[in-house]
Amino acid sequence: MKAVYPGSFDPITNGHLDIIERAAGLCDELVVSVAVNIEKTPLFSVPERVDMLREVCAPYKNVKIDHFHGLLVDYVEGIGAQAIVRGLRAVSDFDFEFQMALMNKRLKPAVETVFLPAASDNMFISSSLLKELSKFDAPIKDLVPPSVEERLKAKLRKDNR
Ligand code: COA
Image 1 (cartoon, rainbow, N blue to C red):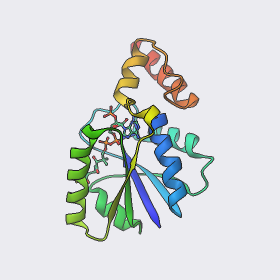
Image 2 (cartoon, rainbow, N blue to C red):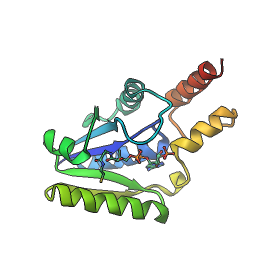
Image 3 (cartoon, rainbow, N blue to C red):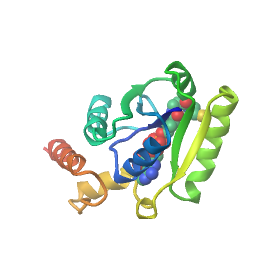
């Protein structure tokens, strides 16, 4: 099975990485794909997010990194994938994720959504919280891969100049 793990990944966290590692173990090929133009104002550009994902996912041989514009289901079908992977952190994620899964199913009945529960250690992580912590120089060492921590620090130093 070929599956897509979509998201904004602004930036990738250990929570995303846990889902990537487990999903990669379930499918033949996992495409981790950065969504362009979703209704968020990103800190990192799409090429920067793709670069970070490439660095961090290098050890997983069946994981590819990509980005996409437009509707997720069109992209999934276009690259010949059969499923969408999403992580669920808490009950609060469920409503929105369930709504998206049902809408995607309505648009393309052949594409399945597979949910993986986030590891309990990662339940509280979100990219926005990490960005906020970094702004105030709070430690984020155990929450993101080391290369992402460096990039976050560098980016915020530059933005504060
Ligand atoms: N561990 C820790 N944090 C996690 C996580 C995990 N396992 N999974 C998600 N998160 C966090 C992210 O860091 C992010 O935090 P933030 O809101 O502070 O940035 C948040 O949860 C949600 O992020 P993400 O999983 O990246 O999803 P998203 O909401 O940014 O993107 C898309 C959702 C891209 C899948 C969706 O918008 C989409 O499909 N867009 C394309 C257009 C389309 O087809 N629309 C119709 C949909 S029906």
